[in-house]
Length: 222
Image (cartoon, rainbow, N blue to C red; front, side, top):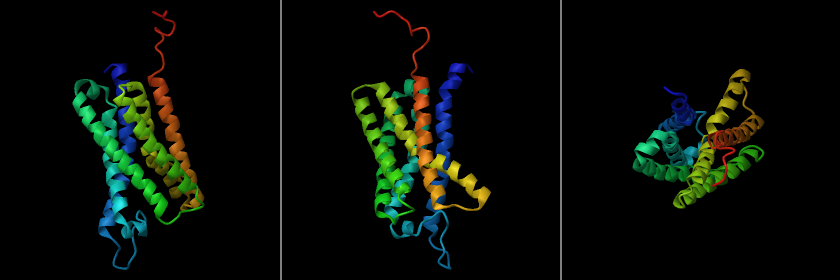
């Protein structure tokens, strides 16, 4: 396999790996909600009591998030865009719907579910939730104008925000297993760090992908 082909698969594979983390945790949460409280009234650590009281927005968030994470890698496979453009467009439409469903339901829960911590987690979910919605809408507007480059930029930003929880878990869980504690401050720092790391990584991927080719950098203007 050539270096170009390997490079083309790096981003989809990376998105799939991080997406599978979100899918795994979402599946566990769905199972916990379906099982409900134990005989003694206790519930899983993966489930908030509010999830059982108001399950509909939680189910929308989790199911939309699972679908979003499954569809995301496909949209970044160059061969699929070239050989099956109709499939790319239709999966992109479902990606848009599921992304908006996950983001808007997340903002709703952040607003109306019981407050957590000092407010830093609330601020992070609000800022990046709105950022994901805006990125999706700008990506849609760009592709309707046939501005493929801007479309790719905004969709990548929406995707890395959507993958934020996976990075947050990779930050928080090792600390928890090492120390046996999970403080509110740790969670709040992890939430912000996860989103910011993903955004930085997304911008690096975009800049690397769209950087001018050496042979064209000094080409004369026509």
